[in-house]
Amino acid sequence: MDAIVFGATGFIGRSLVAELLTRGQRVAAVARNDTLTPWLISQGVDIGELDIVAADITRPLTELPEARDVYNAAGRFAFGLGEAEARATNVTGALNVVEWAAGLPRLRRLVHISGYRVSASEGRLDYARLGAYEASKIEGDLAVRARADALAVPLTIANPSTVIGPGQYVGMAALVEDLWKGRLPALPGGPDTFLPITTIDYLVRFLAEIPASPAGEHYWVLDDETPLLPELIGTIADHMGVRAPRRSIPAGLLRRLPRRVTGADPETLSFLSADRYPTASARTFAAGAGLEMPPAADALRAWADDLVAARFGAATPWLSPHGFRRSAAGSATWVAGERHHPEHVLLHGLPMNADLWAPLAAHIPGPVLAPDLPGLGRSAATTQPVDAWLADLLIPVQTRPTLVAHSLACGPALRFAVDHPDRISRLVLVSPSFLQAPAPRLARSPLAAPMLRRMPAARLARALGVPEGPEVQSAAADLRRPGAARRVAAAVRTDIAERQQSRALLDRVSIPVQIVVGSADPLIMAVDCPVAELAGAGHYPQLTHPSQVAHHLGALSISTGG
Image (cartoon, rainbow, N blue to C red; front, top):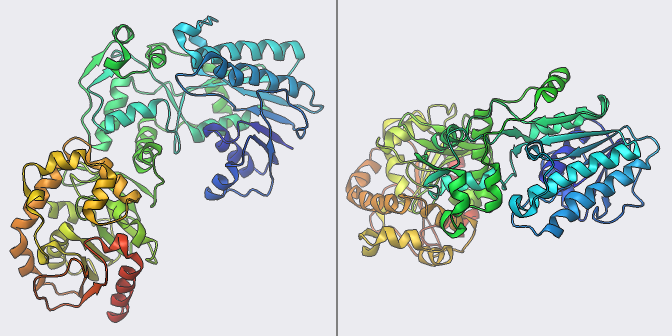
């Protein structure tokens, strides 16, 4: 083998395997179970030169394939670990890798991945003060250096800082999640707190270059230009359209307060530091290898998009690309799918978000564009009319797509179709609320917002008459964000007030229009355009009868020559 990677199913390890395979290397991936292969295939990586090897580094290593380059990316990264649990991988396991590598006849390099805080430790192994994770990384770093030197193993240690990128849901991700969900009233640490980052793509390219360089170096791989914590959080907050905390709590005070008050894990507090790190050798090495870090602010924004799309690890994004974009209406808008050449633009209704369309999109050929409406789902609120928001959203679109709207979104979609008939080819209204029975009185009352905010996904699904799938779960999560439930309740009242206006607009649309409704939620007003009524469906046929809704979209396309 050209390389063997320990910890190959971890966040760093799997990306390193992908990088090495992409470079044409033969790679052995050491793991207790094979969750790596499906991930590599999903990333489009050719696995023809991959060999999966079962092994446990906490025990002496035997019967592994020989390799020229050895990477130890195995590590126990979690807070709240016991000392024995942390040491088993981060110390004993690391030493087992060194012992095994020492017996390889053609070993070129052992690359051990450590942690950036080891430079601030000065060798102190205070498990009680630092916590098991950080203390074990320090102990492991010292032990690996000493043992490799004793066995004459050519060693390079890489000390990356917080590694961000798609799939990273631990560490700083918890801080971003609290910010997103309105649970971060104050920033931990002071104005000079420095939490450096590096991106996963940059790190694995760096690691892949190490074996061909001279041994003996220790590289601190991090971005010295990472903004200080207040600016870092402000950058992410502005991108996501949420409010950044204006106050901060010094780390010293946090250490004295009980955890039930601060909500902070004591082990994270040692990372709230103004320390800087010896990055000169890493920067020189990167320059020689032609590696360049992406701008920190851009990397943070892209990572925030991935975190929100994956619900911070709780879900799998159903549509890419995805992320926040700034609209002319002044709000951060969540947009997923094809932004320039969609065949269908999908506008969701209440109390949902763009995930509502996932089952239907699986039955629609061609690319789709699915945003969250302003103030709903993941999009920030705006003081501008939703019509201005929609017009701005569709400016980059270069096709004449079918505009598909559900429930409350049917009103804005109608107005856009009347004002811009040259921009879209067809209009499909799914369960248009202005033509159906009004929402229950409770949905219009002052009690609606607090009721929605506290409603669990299972109860929300029952109220909507749909299965408790990921679409409902994501909607329930969004309703718990600050102000979201209140905006949903206000939108219901606005929709009811605009019923007559929307009905009048329907007669003015000059492009083909079709309506799709469920038999359990029929129209109560007569219309002149075609109406497809789906037997057994309610107000959300795209969730319960997606293939039938898709069939009617296709039938409309054929009948209009689209």
